[in-house]
Length: 42
Image (cartoon, rainbow, N blue to C red):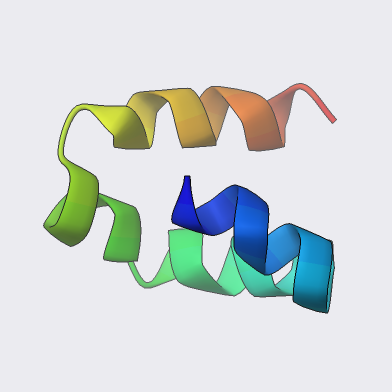
């Protein structure tokens, strides 16, 4: 859910940077797949 909050505050760029750094993999594990699918669907 952190990425959705980041997007609301900083925009899509912040989400993409976080995804690039694999922050989602470190912090959320399986949730990262949902984040990647969300980004690819845009």
